[in-house]
Image (cartoon, rainbow, N blue to C red; front, side, top):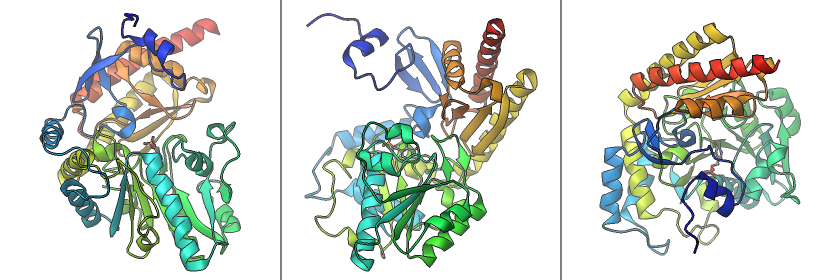
Length: 409
Ligand SMILES: *Cc1c(COP(=O)(O)O)cnc(C)c1O
């Protein structure tokens, strides 16, 4: 074997090129700070894409993981286990749901949700009622079924033939949904805030209208809360602040605080359609993931922590507005809680990646949501000081990108 140094260059040699990671390799993190191989420090506004809701290496998550690692890792679903039962109990106590299915990722949670919606309609109304309606710009994962329900053609192109029986309509357009929904619709699938699609919140009136249309047509409302859930908006799940209850909800990302897990939540009415043998996952509900998620959920579902999300958002907004007063570069700041989307002005559309790369050079991790929107999904407990320090780095990154643009023009 060759003795290649383990660095960013090695990525291009040994990894499939479906990602293009930043030009450094992070090696450790603590709270909202991360260090790379050269010991450069970064402030983390990305939070692993809304995953590290308690920051990096949270001591209580670390000790829970170690404790579970010393007792039981894996059994398969031939046996149940205590961490899975505790987590299911915690999730059902805290939400609309009566029943839970565990898996390992967001896409798998949605795969389960869409299959369950089909199966429920099949069992109760017959095979004709199988159509799924979803929204343009929606994102639901990267399996073939989930890219098909997702509303961005670029994730689907080249992978056809795609599964059928799926229709897309404009988000926040109740008339469009009204025109598309029928008694053949088995489910309407939506994110309370479209994350990957550009951080676009659903209007509360639209959400209520969707629920009513679902009820009129015996269609299930599937809420994809993979990005919005587990405290991100200051509610445990975003639906709790919107006056609407789903029939199925999917959760992942922050649920494990960085340990892979996904969950599909549903009601006693719908759950029986996933009868014995109808669906499964080897790793789903394994003790390691469930122990960590149970601790993460316990720590996050605290009134004080959830209340504080609005305060953290206010600090972010205040600092972003200061930056905008200097550079006039943001068209709109949107989202809810610590799911923050910043749309660039029209003349900077298409350039989000340049801001991302420059921010990283300055020592700040941020995200994008499409080519026009900067996105921040930090730890829910990021210290105010880290927010303000990070914003200084963002300010200088923006100054540099703007100067470079002017030099070209
Ligand atoms: C990230 C995300 C997914 C996919 O989750 P994976 O864990 O990457 O499979 C699905 N839906 C939404 C809304 C997401 O943000």
